[in-house]
Image (cartoon, rainbow, N blue to C red; front, side, top):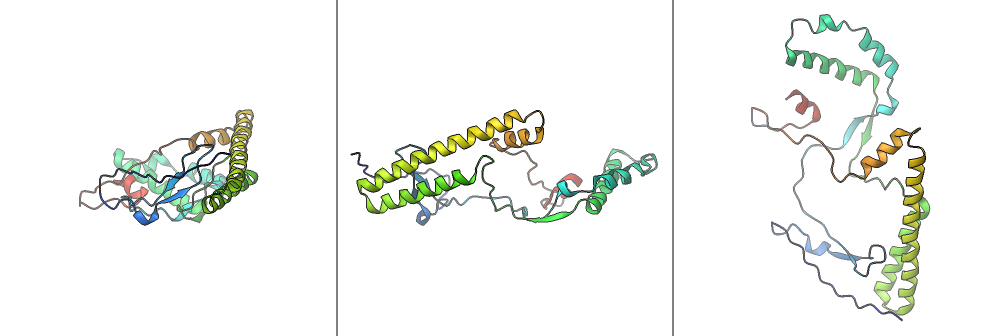
Amino acid sequence: MRYQVVLTQILVFTNEENMIAKDSIQMDSPVGKSDHCMKTFDFCCYLNDENTSGDRFSYFSGNYELFNETLNNIDWDVQLNNKNINEMWKCFSSVMSDNLDRFIPKKKTDRKFISPPLWMDRATKSAIVKKRKSWKKYKYSRNNLSYVKYVKDRNDCTNAVKNAKLSFEQKVALESKTNVKSFWNYVNSKLKTRSGIDTLEKPDRTLTSSTADKIEF
């Protein structure tokens, strides 16, 4: 019977002291079939103080027929007459902003919530929870019986994750021509970085606090 001896050895390099909360370091169940435990800890870092929660446009619920009708009724030749490129842009963005407020409803959002992977289903989530519970029992008891139970649940979880990913990716591939949005939604979910404009400094030395401020600047 296989027996594991757990050795705790954590070495984290940072460029400043106290960036890792020492009391937050914990050992969790290994990833997949690895023999190495997963370490979790709180990382204290610098974040952009831009407000990421509040009201956001719900574009799926917009009234685009009235939106387009309103834009078509605007005499743009008159609106943009005798204006330079910056004044034209301010005029156009102002009209668009007003119509967004009129025809696109808003909803409360909180960016602290992290959505699960697109391929995650109820059975896979249940297998992950079961594996973690078995790991905690083995970590507490340190006997062969609990380790065998953990190995079984770990293997079941690994297979469930692989099957869920494969099934979802096959579905996306088969529907890629008829459901392009779903395809690109999955592609974008695999990206490691997100494009965007960082906080900008205004001439008065203050920083932009919203996307609208960045556009105007």
